[in-house]
Length: 629
Image: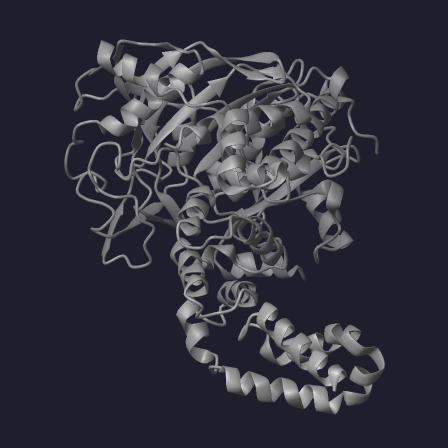
């Protein structure tokens, strides 16, 4: 199947960048944003839906409330306090975070307000203990220059980060409060015509501008791109949680295909009457499927689920119609119900299958009084959720007639998207009553102007000069999550090129082999280079240590250093003498050219214990002496 032509479907893309600020404090308390492994405090909440000031419910919050999940929070007093537990009012706004937001706004030529009001943004998915996120609009307008083109800035907000999701099961969600309350800047850009490569360049340029301030955090999860994507005639789809630039380009291409595919599906549905579909027409078929051979169906019955079926007139072929590969209405419906703890649906275009036989299908069609051109779907779920799920499926089928519904979706690592919830509306926000207006005085504006950072090009040039790096390596280091770590290590270990190569290439290569980078904590990296600087390990040991930590063979660099038997000069001399004597014929025949081969033999046993340079020099000296005799 051909892919849609991007330039002909009216693709538009708007970026929202969420960047954590490196203040070492949270936004409304003095807790430090530490990533911890122990949580001595555990408490539970069940968040309930509240109306806005005008007495309306936000659609996104309404959807989340229908899941009716119990929320469990894990906390450590080292990284959270009563403010995060929602047992104490917020403290005074962190001044460092405010200054950083003003510097970023100034760097983007944005118009800063002299007075900002903290707002509560309703969030009841459990990611905030209070049921809302605090945010404030700091400025509007401005632009960023990308390859000579000015991309407009819509708004810049200062807000709290959400709690970290640990686990999401059918009836409960678990969050850690380490991250809750960390200050973020949210930068919303004007939409641009949708070249995915150009959008990627915008994100890269803006990310670099933020990093040159030296006031933002780095690493996985510290910067997130939300992407607003639309095609001509469709609703705006917000894709949340894009963390990698390569992923960003794939997401845009996938959404372009999905959204245009949904418009083609809508054209097929034009003449079908969908308005009359109602959940009242659904039929309880639990007993009907009691002797069905499907393992999925039998497990649902065993779990006490109710199974319901609903027929739709003239809908045959519509669930499975596929204008582009993997773009189907049936897939969209399956994603809708998963958020009610339901695995998915079966529909008439994919049956018989999954253990449901043709005889089951024929009898079901008779039960539902369906004609040849009619379709149906089957859904199983708990009694308290199945009605919500059927409503969601029916509403999505009806919305399919209009093409692309405005909704919020989540990015996946594979580069596609899945349904998350409806788009929020204006009823989501209301004023924060516990915090007075935030004023911006003349001195703060002057401070922001004076601290606008150097340009990206100037910063890279300075980095090259200071550490003797080539252009490519300097850019790799600065764009990586390890920039501050690189500078710290270079104060003790005087080989910047080796350090940069390890941080930008070695770790990445190990990660590509499937090893877990999150196990390699910053303190383990710095400790490894400390051992190297003090001649406790060889250069070759660095990659071995990182590989062993990332594969959970050892926990710390010191574990490796202690496990290696010390090889003194006398032991080395004896070891090399034995290798030379065992290969004396090759030495006599090849002379000094035999060093390379003997070096390889020696490194098989000595790699990581003694530096290769020392072994090579010793071998050369010994072979030269033998040849002279």
